[in-house]
Image 1 (cartoon, rainbow, N blue to C red):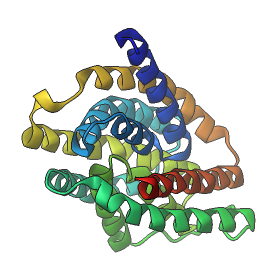
Image 2: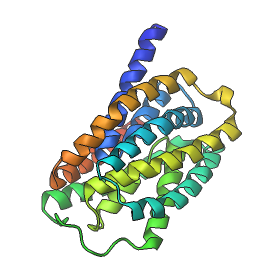
Image 3: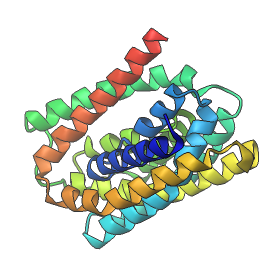
Amino acid sequence: MSKSLFFFAMVLVGYAAQFVDGTLGMGYGAFSASLLITLGLYPAIASASVHTAEIFTALVSGVSHLKLGNVKRDLVLSLAIPGVAGGVMGAYFLASIPGKTIKPFVACGLLVMGIVVLYRFMTGKIPSTPRSEGTSLQKLLALGFVAAFMDAVGGGGWGPIATPGLILTGNHEPRKVVGSVNLVEFFVTIAEVLTFLLVLGPEQFRWDIVGALLIGGVVAAPLAAFLCKRLPHRMLGILIGIALIGFNLRTLILSILR
């Protein structure tokens, strides 16, 4: 494959990944990093390259969601600080332990979570109107830390863990969960990239891939945020469940084949 064709293919990957992520609150890192690892990049380098591009796509996506009213400010404040801490620790951890070792175990848990989300939305177990009480601060702190840690280690995981974790409480509108998770992702990603720069060095990054993913993601972000606002509550929840099941089945199958 020529360099120009490869660059264009990476732009399309960035567009598709951000479109799914901005609409359903998950998929950018998992989709992009999985492809880069398949192409032969080491997990740490793939994660670092994906997250560098994701700084800009997460910013555009988060601002788009904020302008469209898809953000719950108390969620952003509660998730951001533990998310940054988890992202830094996860990036350091990945430098010494391969992310591929952990990913199958994470995928099993997320697959079960996806089945639960799909079942509860299809059977009406999640109320169409969120409950008045919010999620406890302790749960938000733990969720933010774990989601960011696994995001850095696996090249993706912030959205797949944080989004269903909040939706399953029934305390938040799915669109506001997606918007808030997308906005916090910007701060988490900055922390991860700075850590990767210190640990790996900038010469280890694939800057051509970073640029291509960035272009595709920035173009897709505003459209995905608009679609997230328009999708009905129940349909958005069902799509999130299907996405979780699909992403993690793929991860498990690839792990078994390897």
